[in-house]
Length: 247
Ligand SMILES: NC(=O)c1ccc[n+]([C@@H]2O[C@H](COP(=O)([O-])OP(=O)(O)OC[C@H]3O[C@@H](n4cnc5c(N)ncnc54)[C@H](OP(=O)(O)O)[C@@H]3O)[C@@H](O)[C@H]2O)c1
Image 1: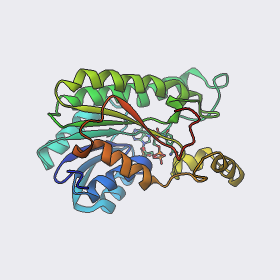
Image 2: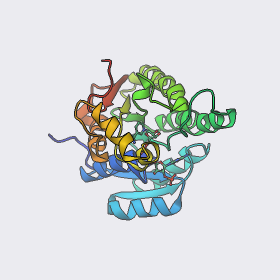
Image 3: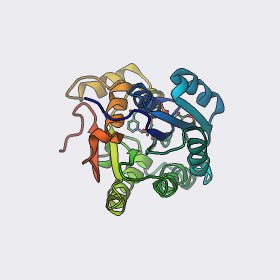
């Protein structure tokens, strides 16, 4: 199947590693071009070097209110068009509700929630018919992850933001999809499942009996952003090997 990605241009935040990078790689692999971002210039440079000609990078924190403008400007200057946006960002720190302090909630709200709103608002101004926005959330939209109170608190709200803005943008032919990874083999997962027994326990509970590789997520996200997914909007796509216990 031709995804129709050739020459399209996507902005990918949190794009130097993990799920964002896997999506950027899948997009570029199918002929798209990307502007990727993350906080560390070194990480951005390494990711761009790995992706080659189809990628450029911008260093910036999703909590920074100027990030969207800088990514838009970079895309316009280098590629002359913008067709979509994938928002990924570093996950909030682990912890339960009772032991997580207010500052940690505010920091996560700023990068994960407000950062997403700002990017969606700014980049949707640039998109035209066929444009697409993907939000990288997590299966905590549907059921809580153990010991990840902040993620469990913020992601369901963002999924509903995605649903809401999908309706607002639908008349312009712009789609919005939320992606719900379960457990994927990235640095984030290594920080949460710190010992082999925790990983083995998690894998035993997944119907496919293993966590995902990042490219398994990246391919789904690239499809969801592509013209091939032209009737997909206002929905959540779960990429969890069957781990979520509800539909
Ligand atoms: N991996 C999983 O199994 C899984 C499951 C469910 C949900 N998720 C969620 O999916 C998202 C991505 O996870 P991941 O596994 O890809 O994480 P990861 O491997 O830690 O990669 C995170 C990426 O985001 C960048 N980043 C971190 N904080 C940022 C910030 N404030 N602003 C901009 N960029 C930032 C990092 O680069 P810099 O350090 O250079 O900024 C890196 O490129 C997270 O929100 C996570 O909670 C992941």
